[in-house]
Amino acid sequence: MTADFTPSNWNELIQMLYDIPKDRDLNRYRSDYFYRGLGDASWSLESSLMRLGGDYHKVEGALLRNFVKYAELGALPSDNFWVQLAIAQHHGLPTRLIDWTVSPQVALHFATAELEHYEKDGVIWCLDANRSRRDLPKEFWKILDDEYAYLFSAEMLKNIKSFREFDKYGQDKDFILFFEPPALDARIVNQGAILSAMPGVQTRLSDYLHRNPDLYQRIIIPRELKWEIRDKLDQDYITERSLFPGLDGLSRWLKRRYGPGGIS
Image (cartoon, rainbow, N blue to C red; front, side):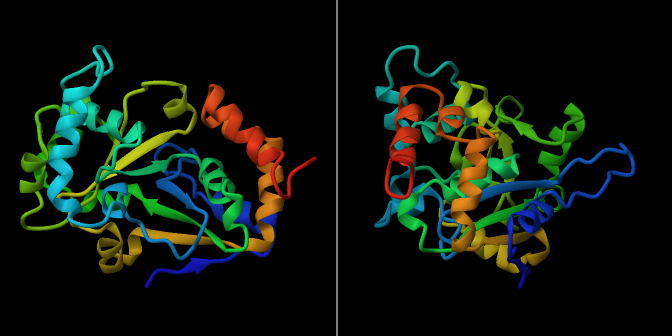
């Protein structure tokens, strides 16, 4: 099993999140990790499609097909499967994708944004994107090499036009694919959004990581630290106002700010 790290104070937490070794080639401090923050440390890494429950594996295709079919004119700027999938995820359609961020502080926001979970420890999942690429099929390595890229974009994956095509690559071995969604709006940009996908609608990321414990670590957020973390993130403007620009984000920020435990 991988190690769980539990800081006892803010300084230890920041040290854990930013313990980034210097890249010998670049002579820079560049993290290999993507981050996902959850308000309850007991929650698993399930996709929104899995959380739908029931025969979710049977309706994946129908969900996206009807999303594309009924989307208003001009709402989908591309017929690229991965662009459409990212837009669907962005607007709340249950998909097999899982949201990540390049920012430790954005992950901290999501671990402390839900006041109803403040009696529980939170968690930051830190997944090593560099190591995770080792299981990619050779066809995907070729795409990265041809583009001289570290991370996939939706455009780089345009020749894979359906889940059925994508799933064929996982017949011999599971893998996780990270890609950067198109910059559809300020929300995606401000959150430093990254999306992950795995072949096979019923393939569970948690099972894959259990078999590959060197790919990740978890930082447990003690419930006793949540208010301090929340206040310091607000001080740094890591809030709903910045991460969800617009009236919806403003309302979410005000609801939390003036809700129980906030200011009156």
